[in-house]
Length: 225
Ligand SMILES: [Zn+2]
Image 1 (tube, rainbow, N blue to C red):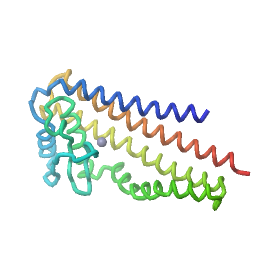
Image 2: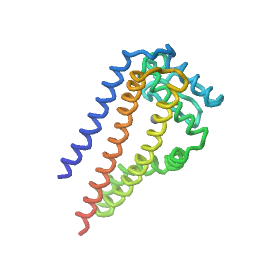
Image 3: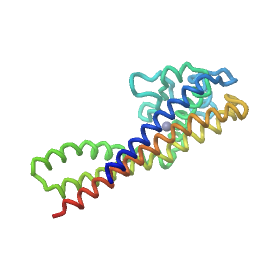
Image 4: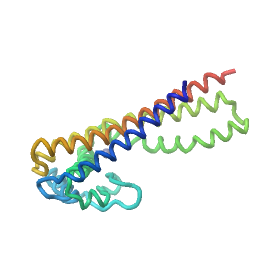
């Protein structure tokens, strides 16, 4: 039963990842009529939002596109930074959405920032707990109970990520036509397709974390005696 749930959850996240790849591949072919690159789009959106202390940099390594609130940088992968497609401007605008959230002290972003430390710390406990449990230092019931709590903290973090991501995409969908970076329903549809597909991956990550919680709770319950 749980094996099926786990397969289902990982299947969903795999499919979501493939889906977002296919959307980006498709809309990378469709140019935005303004002719702006992703980097220029980001510049334009930040200026229009009166943000002057955020820099736009090429993303290095495996990090991909993201906004870093600590360094106040919008990092864009080469395809997005230089690209002039609807996919590129959509992703660039989404990352600027996070910069705007930061500037406006958007509640869910603040909250997520506040719990990121405890989430990382509790995640790091996972394997040590498993180890002491298999060494019979703690009982399986205690071990799985602690792992269930860790899984719940991770699930809470994934849940907080959802409004942050949806809001950043909504800002992008609103700002791009407003600033004339995309024009007409076809370009709006292209941007929505890419951003909605990306949102699905976050929903999938939440589902995986939910299945994990159920799994460890069940294991803790089974090992009570
Ligand atoms: Zn995002």
